[in-house]
Length: 607
Image (cartoon, rainbow, N blue to C red; front, side, top):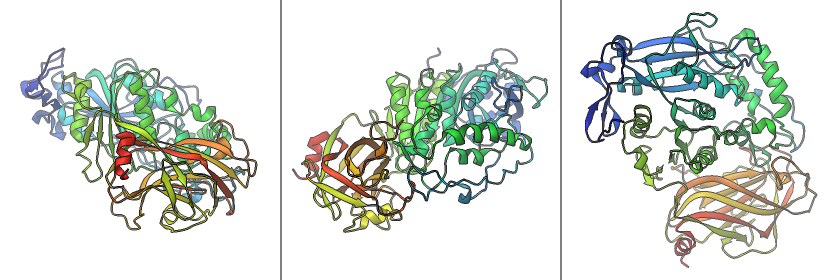
């Protein structure tokens, strides 16, 4: 391999065959990053082509292999001067429009836990736009002037791609695999959706990197699980890595933030923008025969349907280097989605790095970091990516492009500190290292918002236990482990747990104020998320689960509060009021991942 010093300026020719690229029409690298090249930056000189890549599946069962629609934008020199370049690739189900149906076509969450939900009406179909050459223009201006090709493809059953959308089904991994195979000369591409005139990617080096946000961030991981040769690096931003974790939580039917009543079949309807002539067939195959039979909104249990849509179960073949990005206050695709995969791939010994910020959904890593990642893994430039800190975290008052480096995530200096609730939680009890005694009761009030619970000086519909006022900042980094011993007056109950910063500020100006983390669970699944056991009124069960992972510094003058309540009207089903949930304080605790461990905690509370 050509050894390059990151501080120098280099021209690299990767173009065997054809005319040799001129000196000013070659990729340029400086400080370990691909630079904008004058010869590449004029969009009038770019080549844009469109094609259909043949896959290895027939998801609509019409007897023919599905083809997916692909567009390519590349420097003109890949045709005129024989230049070969790697490809940055994004794939999506969103490029060709989504359903404009409102929440009246979602599931109605207003019913008892364990009851068969009211039937969901089918939304109007998506009107497919007229054909256009480009699926998307995303990332083109960032990468093509720097000497990469930019590739987009529409997911199966969306836009002008054949097949059916499956929302996490195997075809969503095999479709981008086919595109990567085409970029490497192993799959066929055609100039039309049903013709036999081939088009080849002889301009590509075979090195491919994938990037995208949300669903578009899920699909790079899906592709990587196939182990496809040529996929060297991926940058999933806020990816949904398990549809169970997206629509359920520890056995509980739980909706993504901002989308009460959404479930996997709703998302299917939302993206199903493919050929109108085939939609009824796909609806029957996917929505009726698979999703509505197996998604199980009655028990919320984990089953084989959900296991097949959990990428955490499919990591054995992953070889790509992974730069994971997420926001710790993303309550749509929650941060556990990225953290669980980052930790699993790190344990496999794969090249991994993470970028986490304090904001909500989305948020690419800084362009310089993305550039270095792709420059190293797609062009082979030996920059400092291998030696960089593994974790980059945007602190509470910093801009997203100014992350603080750490050795890893969770912070290697974090250690669990176990705190226990005691006292009157209907008012504000105590959260300390000393065990509590007795039981405290919650009377479910389904319409009460979490903020209302947190601001109440006293309430029968929640328990709240607070630490002493902090005399020094407390840095929390990692997972929160909750253990609760609870008994219900009814056979089923919602269980919602928040970690909050007190006093709660009603008009908070910063997203990190008030809420530290949260989680939800079904006490019926205390033994296993695969099987619900109806609760026996008055009989205690031990429930253990994690709140969402986090990295946050709680400032001086705040208190850390453990808040326990039942129905969360922003996330859970909403049964009628009145269920009484009893919490045995002696059997309940929360473990905080404190940087500096117990010594740091004691110093912060003046002990």
